[in-house]
Length: 129
Image 1 (spheres, rainbow, N blue to C red):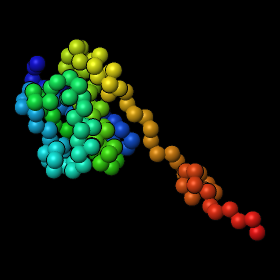
Image 2 (cartoon, rainbow, N blue to C red):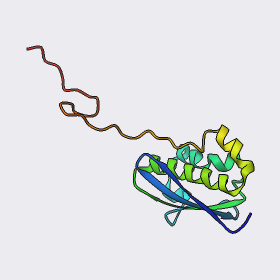
Image 3 (cartoon, helix red, strand yellow):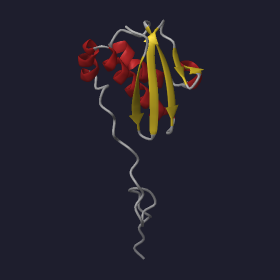
Image 4 (tube, helix red, strand yellow):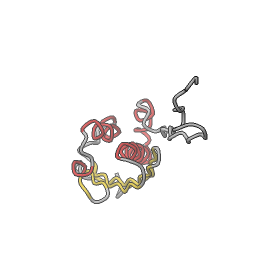
């Protein structure tokens, strides 16, 4: 493994720039440690999934800069960025990452509001008279 690799990950409105370098498993997000920035255990497991699939959790350090969206979208963006960076790192990681569905961007975004409705699909209460 050479110095460092980086890639961009996206999810909903969030965009993350992820850099991976050899290390001992530390993850930094916007200058904060992982547990400081993300406090929900399921989101932390989701974020670490690409590292677990490739058995690199304690062998690399991850530094991520993320903007936009909420905490779940940001976590998904970082996860996507980590997977894309690991794919760049070595071609042997491509197959397990692809099988786990980590290289595909989750393209689901919020649906726009339509006129005459309260939200994208929620209609006002119907009144017969």
